[in-house]
Image (tube, rainbow, N blue to C red; front, side, top):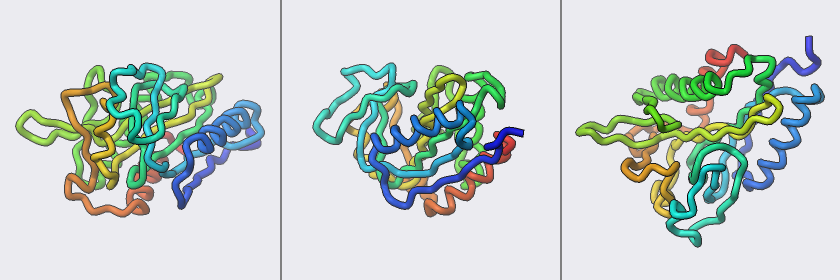
Length: 213
């Protein structure tokens, strides 16, 4: 048995500066790879900011002055992070769990879909669009959760963001994830009154089921 087989669960009570979070992830990824630290699932929020993933296009940053912009090595394009949005950074040893990136992404999506179902929300995948979408009727749909991961030597980091009750107007400074024709939504906007603690409990329960931890 490995020394650090037990997964760690961490929840930050105050918004974590983005660069601080990246630094912590970098340290933990190295520890996991060297078997000097455990896998971890980290629940947090960030202050308002935009992140630019590896595929971000300059034209998708509509208001560069709205919030700080952080370039990041994760996959994906521009996205917003801020208070009221649950971010979960997932640092797992995929070499041990199964080195299949496509399956890992599908598992992350299924984790979100199953969690939303517990809250009475129908979340769906869309071909060619990473993340989880909610049908709104009359052919309309909106994104409620984003995925952006990075893998180093088969250790994952970054993760998912779920809109619980953020200020959705903050998305107006970017073309979120490069998708212009659809908007974004949140649990609050859908009329679901759930506290962050309630959302966290569901996310943890469903994560344990999906990832067998």
